[in-house]
Image 1 (tube, rainbow, N blue to C red):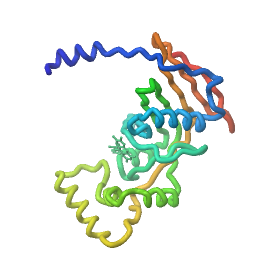
Image 2 (cartoon, rainbow, N blue to C red; image 1 turned 135 degrees about the vertical axis):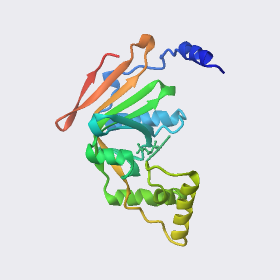
Image 3 (cartoon, protein in one colour; image 1 turned 180 degrees about the vertical axis):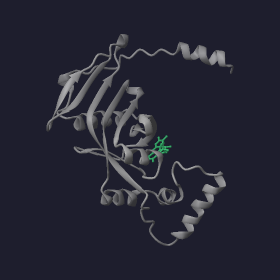
Image 4 (cartoon, rainbow, N blue to C red; image 1 turned 90 degrees about the vertical axis):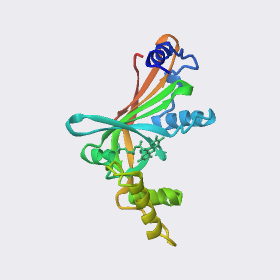
Length: 218
Ligand SMILES: Cc1cc2nc3c(=O)[nH]c(=O)nc-3n(C[C@H](O)[C@H](O)[C@H](O)COP(=O)(O)O)c2cc1C
């Protein structure tokens, strides 16, 4: 397919959003309950990996970077994810914990945007989650120096084989460099697409111990 026809198809993409609406009386008392409600609806709708979210961090000179990660926990303190602390995102969060999360729930014509601060997760929570992971993923956490250059696929495979041999016949412990973050939100926006691009945007903003709700223009 030539570039011209791909760009033609791109120009023809136009979705009208009319699946639903969102108004202040529809909102739960806090963004965690509201998020759980929408996550439940995403699960019920059979969305593929509805816990996949874009995590954006800030690097040197204020330059942002984004990548997908998985939401693995949620309570009234925040949104939990797991990763390698030595990775690019880990290094960036260590230098500046401000970050953003985005859930792109296209089939529901929804997105949720979260801005807040990432706190390093308690070790007990990391170990508890690590125990639930398949052995292959546990070994991968040892074998991969996430975000570092590697010479070849063979080098990665060799590192994985080495860890497989090292921990043979025993439980795989949590590597020191591996852990999690809880993103404590300052704002959580619930976005519902509407006809004519007149979307609903309702934002919870931290207000002392509670939350203030604001509607934003689409
Ligand atoms: C759907 C999906 C889920 C992912 N989940 C995670 C995750 O939970 N933790 C993680 O460290 N990387 C995850 N990744 C890989 C990251 O997107 C990224 O490649 C990796 O963390 C390195 O990012 P960094 O170099 O910016 O630190 C996921 C990728 C995809 C596509």
